[in-house]
Length: 251
Image (cartoon, rainbow, N blue to C red; front, side, top):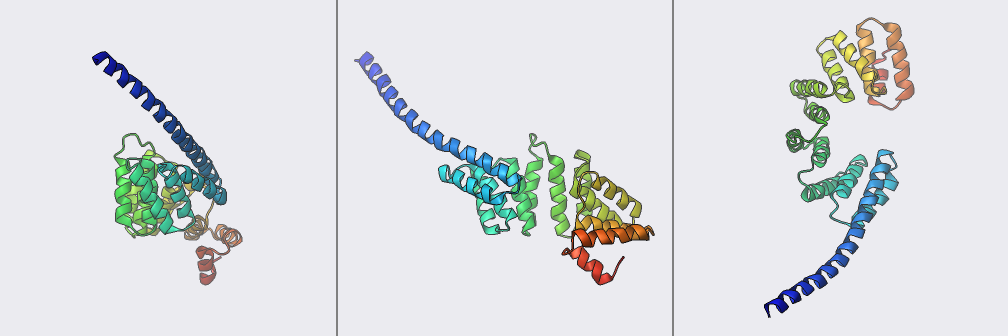
């Protein structure tokens, strides 16, 4: 009887195992579809094709509503579209599903800082820093600098940007931020040096051109300042910097 029981148990396990395998396969098919659509969505997101990205990420969530990556990147998409409530909802869901994912923590931290939840955002960014496997710590410090910059904390902004550059000396926001801080301190040559480094890795923006124009004026380079003013008005006609340029009638 014991042998019969043992065989019956094995037979029962085999049958249950077979049924479970079919169920798992069906589930895995949905998960694979979700993964594939998430990857496509991320690719479209990187290309700036937001409509296509949204379609793919929504399809991913339709097939697997517990896919943390799909929630993460649709949140990032909503952040870029400035739909903050939806972004927050999906970031939180991504965190619930994978609370130890440093990439999610980093991007959610950036989002929170962007909407003014500075303490919560910095708390998440600090969690990323203690992850020994997270390799882009320079970018995290840069993000923290941008966060405290919004708070008007110049001392901590400078500290975070300088630390960021120790990890990675090719971080455009940290370089531009330090250029501005040094200019505000009257350290014109240092500001100019940081701007030069910034332009080696980043395209001009209205902010960088405006700062470069101010540096040129401080150095007495009127011709250079004039050409920068023309460039600013030409490429960024609707920017706040161009409006200020016109208001102050600078050349």
